[in-house]
Length: 273
Image (cartoon, rainbow, N blue to C red; front, side, top):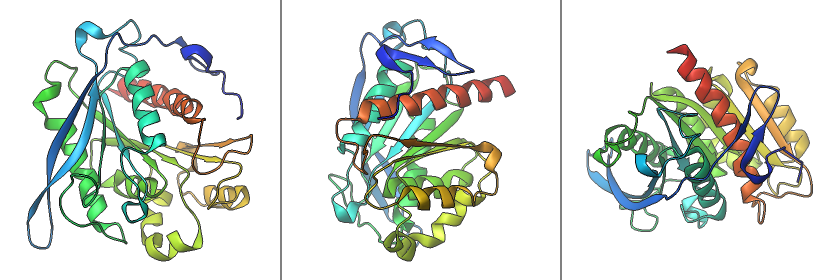
């Protein structure tokens, strides 16, 4: 995998040099939050995993991303995706441990203990993601934390299509990350209408892929990146070393790269306030 100067919890680039210390302890809670169906106003319960660090368990770098929380979205529910995916949990564990900010991953409706039925075209999953953001902003479980002002969506595979498509629909969503956005023909046939949201969003965005992704070639990835309307707010990363769509054994380096970007955009958010 391409070196990212992030070994042993250190994060270094031209703008940021910081040693990240582990939180003393991570709180992990299985939770449920509601989502209302638009057509019939039926309310479903969505299963999630909330990870956070209580004030007494935070260490010296815990204020780097103050007021920021993360929502992580998983691969396609119709293809076996859930929040128990290796990439999803790898990102959640690293961000919770080192950035020490609240992180919520959840099962789209119809997956695990989440009620309802999923959709092939993303309409249900988009509502689920917005409901997850609203839960983070309102839950009393985080009452001892710094109030959340900014939410960043981190989506993986199908979850990146969904996450990027809702980024501009909620004022508290300030940025988004897309891990291995599937730009292949099948995805574009079913979800092509959602791509325009990512391409046109003015919000900060990070797109990552492996050099051997199973669904999107490097040339296709680069072509799509050239189509973004607000390219000044776009950062990209291609991991070298025969890295495929599934990141087996490389979850930690992936999470470190995302964390470096989260720190940068979080500092930008807080400097603007």
